[in-house]
Image (cartoon, rainbow, N blue to C red):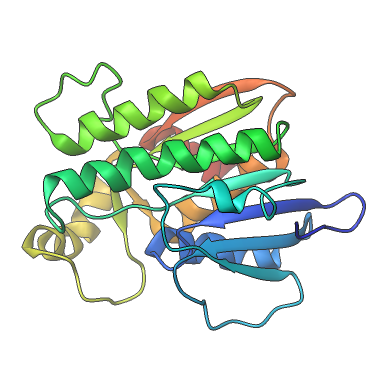
Length: 230
């Protein structure tokens, strides 16, 4: 357990080596209400910070070994994922669904009062009837999380996430979207969100919450409104 000072929050982040998770980590480390940040991942972040503790874990299909570091936590941010088409379908399902469910299982048992912020995606289908694998698998993960019983569960469904900083785009589609972003931002503002703004919203709601017990699904429009209201 990475204990935080009295009056501050102990936060867990999974997926901090990814784009949104990386911004979430930066924001959490700078957040005055966050006293301790535990990052769980397969490799080190390469950062040194007095709030930061890193736990290496290779097999997210079995998170049982994380019971101790997940004990006594106040909130978790789960941004682990993979782009559609980057891996075979079975591995994509495993990463999107199985990893999420098993991590949530261990966190719920180790820290029953913890809040949980989950990075899902626009179009997630909890009926699992969609023809799109991304929508089916994210929907299945959402449904499983809702059944887990977290006192505060926040599901984020962003549309196109603008990378902000230059990067090697994962495919042609993302290269086109990045090029079109200036026009999209003006013509279809509720279909885009900056990666850093999304990360801040995900962390902020987990840290501060809204009530003692609630489950909320935030679509892209809702996330933008959250960012504007801060």
